[in-house]
Image (cartoon, rainbow, N blue to C red; front, side):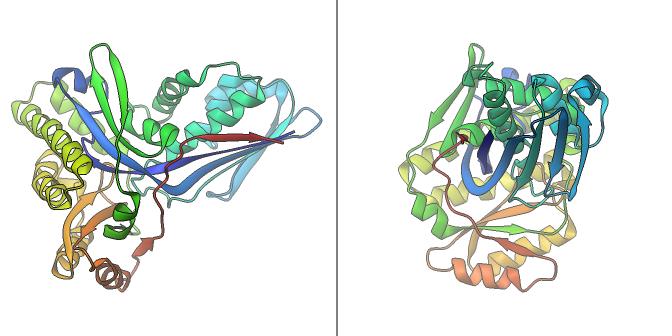
Length: 335
């Protein structure tokens, strides 16, 4: 038996960090806006025909072998910790070889680990006979990844990975609701460029500092989160209207607020890249994820995306990512 699954990563446009529970409960109307991209996380499971369990990460060029009888110990194993904990949770009853990989660079801020969690859950759940309903996948992914990063996990990445497409994810007292946004995929592809700075980041650390200040009642932090909520509302409206000048305005207004919330969201290198891109046709920049490295998404003037891309690609250590809009979310195939 061979099971293969994939899930897209995402670009977050507005509403980041407010998706961490329970922060959104203090900001009625909280939402995040993102869209899936074709840098996929993948999981492949093939039965071994014996008791062997082989876990492998193609991205990290590492792996290890255990047995079915030792699966209980995986909950404490630090090797490929996310995959180990997922396998421990599902506890398959036949030997297998699991291969995980992701097209997104490590520490890119594109939700790669969350997309990988969704892809692995899809494959493992099929492998154990569809033990869980698909509507449980996002909660499972968030709970298990939280035990890995050891701080609360935000929810938006799992929705992008599970559904793909363009999303407004609304966080309410009675639950979380995903709204699919009708957008022109070609316009997004034509006008947004994604730059990987070459500097990985650790989102759990950045987000945890903001989380603690909010919970401790810091008024400035609370007010910044109010502005994050309002920016997501405006971003949703601008995208639905296809008004990219308004999209740029929201991105430009949000940038200093994110800096106030977390001064280390940008590095000197990132700030230099933003300044250079703005001189060569970029209208606005959005640090992806929690920042402190990783990727920057640039909204470019119509007809000037190539200029922005060429300008940034000339910088040492920078990689311009090739991507397409991912209309489809999690897919699982068996053969």
